[in-house]
Amino acid sequence: MPLFSSYLRRFYVALAELTWGAIAGLAIGHFLTSWLLLMVVGESDFVARPVDFVYYYVVTATTVGYGDLSPQTGAGRLIAAFFVLPGAIAIFTAVLGKLLSAVSNSWRGRMKGLGNFGDRSGHDIVMGWHEAATQRLLGLIVAERAAGEALTVLISKDLEENPMPDKIDYVRVERLADPVGLERAGGANARSIIVRGETDDETLAAALVASATCEKAHVVAYFDFESTATILHRQNPQIEAVTSLSSELMVRAAKDPGSSVIANLLLSAGTQDTAYSVTVPDGTTSFNYETALHAMRRRHAVTVVGMARHGNVDLNCKDTMEIRSGDVLYYIADQRLDPGAIAWEAFARTSA
Image (tube, rainbow, N blue to C red):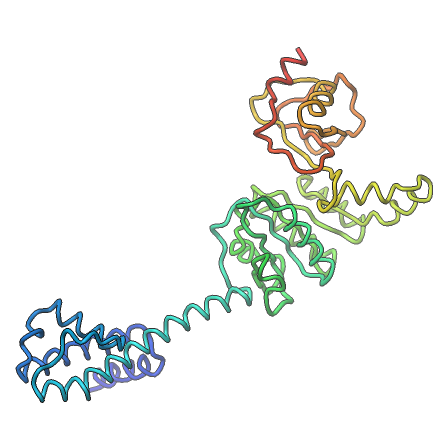
């Protein structure tokens, strides 16, 4: 008796919550009972053929009612009118409502930051939310995103819903330095991760977690204080630390009028003459900087302005500087170059 009571309680809970298991049980039970009742009253014309009865049951449940199959006896019609029809329609409505609810809950969950984008790759992740500043940052990233690239994922602990649902995806976390949040955001295969917490301490912790758990991504962290950026560089030189350049820009603008305009042009993807970078592919024969300078200008109409090796940037290279595989070339152009379209081997032959 206690066992029966336990099963009855489980069935009641499943029925009350209208779970998929309860709906499936009701549908099978009603289908079999309908078949049995119609068979008992002599509706063997189509009940005896399983395919015909399934067809009759489905068109009845969906209220299509083609009329090509129907009970012929009075008792059969009464069973169809008062048992088959209302029961089948109720079950079909429950299934449809459950499906719509599941789709709606899934969408609402993604809007509220509960989605999982762990299978995403080649995308950008932004950690932290600062109203207008973050919206502008996301807008610039969206402006640079090429056709077919995956959407950027925002990770935040302050937002109730996705602030830009038509342009980005959103993952909500309890704390910014959360490896699980990064995993849900697809951090393992992300292209870059931009970190800006509420405080420098939060940014430092989140940047270190991101670098440790997302080895393929280039991590960039913004700090209000240079001292914290220095600490991060000592902990992990691979993380690129950024601090405000407003003071430096004001001094340069005062000493060299127009410097701030140049800086804005070089950093904004929404304008022409933007600064980009490209990495020399593995296996490329080395060539000198002068060759890169002239060849990139002649072949691609871009201006090379410097190079970097192992994180050390030189914007005033000697013409004889050797450029090797893995080095980064910085250039100014109207739009980013496709690395596959650059004839690296031709540079080597010209240099030779």
